[in-house]
Length: 411
Image 1 (cartoon, rainbow, N blue to C red):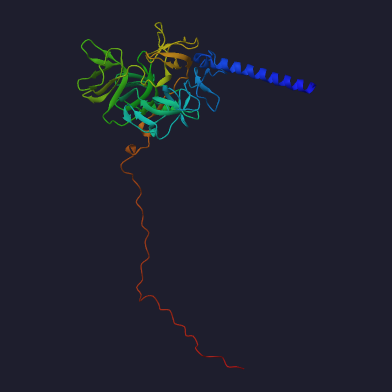
Image 2 (cartoon, rainbow, N blue to C red):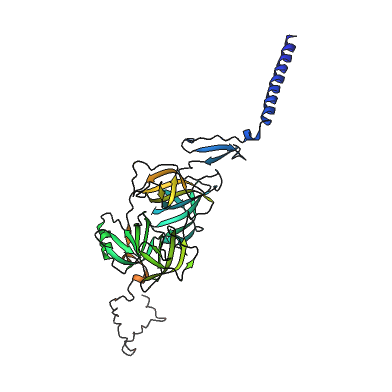
């Protein structure tokens, strides 16, 4: 009797628990879709990553898709874990090393599918050199690495040297004042002193707001007839255009856009009777990236006057004030989110070290064009061969007679 009552009580308890679970499950199913897709936001991030988790189709059954606000591994990418990435990263900066391509502290992977250009012309990965300024687009791959989709080598100016000051380490190329920093290296100073007016040079570097170009690389090159310059345009009342102290003849140029005062342009052409005659003029307004790029790493100089707000390379920086240890004229890298209006909502502004110019005069290059056309080599001395003797002089070898059936007598 007692055992029967215990069994009845246990069954009643089980039914009660099942009913409670059923009610809870029913209540969960009746919750609103908004509650189902609730997002947990964290301003400071989780373990410094700034991750925001919300429900989705799930990763390995977890039901979570992680998006990055402040970045994954410091890259600032908005990426779906386990996927190819949502939103690319735009980079404008100076190559500081290889292995991967190192720009602005980022390790950028590449492969034979990476598209490379140099000042609007097709180029190859072997053309990349330390000190060059590039602009590129990278995506996060499945292993979490930034992989370059395409990049362009951007030279600030290419043309003949019109004046050079060896003491102040400055030169003028196509009306653009260029300052090099050889960091007291005697070998580099010696090479710099070998340059002279009229030499063709290709300058990699960034402009300050004063128009001065700080060179990070300077290569002496052949005169192939093409010269180029990129920078802010000044348009006079009569319509004449100039960049720095260079007056530009646009009468025969293919204009992609009308150049206006204050815009930035890339102009390529020829020197005809010491007049820069443009063949191509392209206005460079806004970021040189498509809408697929969401994050940006921008290298440049803090303007001398930031009363109207901070701008780096002409792009407004919002969201952060300049750190107290950074002063006008300092070189910085701005990391942030790219806005539709061309502004950058900064997450970080950090100072980078002064760039040392890498100087490569022609005499240090190894291509065939700088080798002498002929090489004086000592004439080879032929060895005297022995005189062949006629057959009559050669004595005949005596023929040995061998006994045939002769046998010694038996004793």
